[in-house]
Length: 203
Figure (cartoon, rainbow, N blue to C red):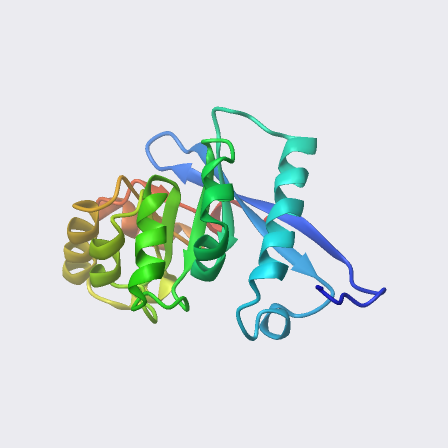
């Protein structure tokens, strides 16, 4: 049982992911927002709750603006992949899953489940917690999302990390880019995808 309060309310917003040559939108990240702060709602892993939210997010996409040629990125934890891997694999092929770096990537069973659908997985938050090249190498996900904390490193270090993760993934996105200076910097270093307030707030 999920045990929601009758006053529990939620909605979804979308944030575009842009290709940086012509600034075409190639994906939408679907963001969950409720009247309960996420730090409380997700203070511990809750696969049942996340699975419920995942279903509602899919309904939101399909009811509004589904396009089979656009990628949709949905945030889930590795425990959801572990429990519902077969179900996730049957969802439309343009649905991808951003797996947060708070997940237990040291659990080999979880890693094996992630690898089963690795062509649908993004390792989200590269540069914090378990988001590192060792995790990327173990999973070999479709994509990796760099955390903005990586902007605090030098250009040489950023380029090195980009080169390393690009060996194991098809798509590297720099998330939470907030201004033109940051955007021009990552473009000059070879990043080809980004998302963040520089393209407008989520809607």
